[in-house]
Image (cartoon, rainbow, N blue to C red; front, side):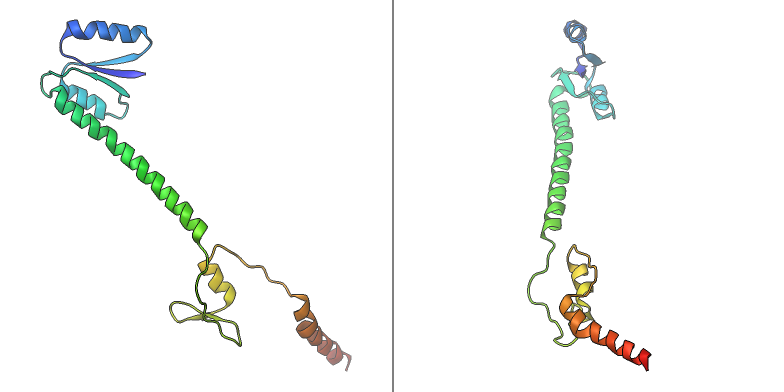
Length: 158
């Protein structure tokens, strides 16, 4: 793991640096608060920082406050991202038709929110996560299609 040591006093810093390196960590050393902040704001910043409380430029109290903010912002972004994903999933699950649908008793068209009449299939496709395939039910085949076919056959026979 990359670890930042922000310590301006070499006798305090060197033993800690050597011990962390012996334990297999990559150590990044800074000697003042401004340099430490610059490292922590970088793209490849260490995930852990050991800070001196009394340093030149920016002391450890101000640096800690900035680090706390730097940690909190990505946490909030992650929480927001999770909430957005949950909301999108919820909306996808909840997309369905509700309430009364004004439908013509003759042609079976539905009046939408803009007072436009459209086929049932189009309305439902616009308001629900569905698609339609078309066919002919047995009752309609016998009562509508077969008589039309019979008329065509009798007309062709004449």
